[in-house]
Amino acid sequence: MDSARPRPPRRAPASRRPGRAPAGRARLAARAAVTAVTALAAAAALTAAAQPALAGTAGHVLAVASIAQVIRNITRWIAGILAGLATLFLTIGGLRYLMAGGDPSEVERAKTALRSAAIGYGLAILAPVIVTVLKSLVGG
Image (cartoon, rainbow, N blue to C red; front, side, top):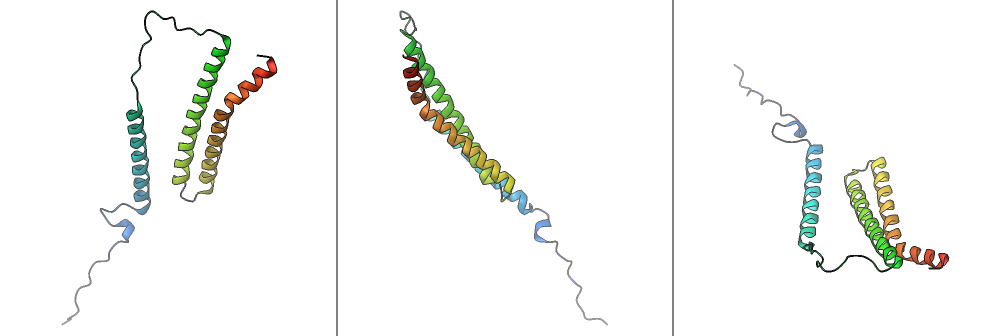
């Protein structure tokens, strides 16, 4: 008679147990959750800061009085667009850097996006200065 107890079945490694996601999937899910929370926070901030659009009064003609006013308006629009694009590149670069996971090529792409954001912010800040210098050169 053999008094030895039967052997229990072998367990699978931790990453392959049924009902458990592999470590890579868990990390990807965590990154996706962080990205979703960031996007929701940005949407909430933009919604809270929104103002209603008001139409001009019917008796006024919405026109500018001079070319200088047109140039100032265009300068403001360009600076706003540059700042918006720079913010987009800053966000993309930051997310790429967070999700690089040590991959050197992804880290380099993130650094390139962050560098582009810095250039965009610099141009947005310098846009009025550039217009002023050009006006003085032209004689305006």
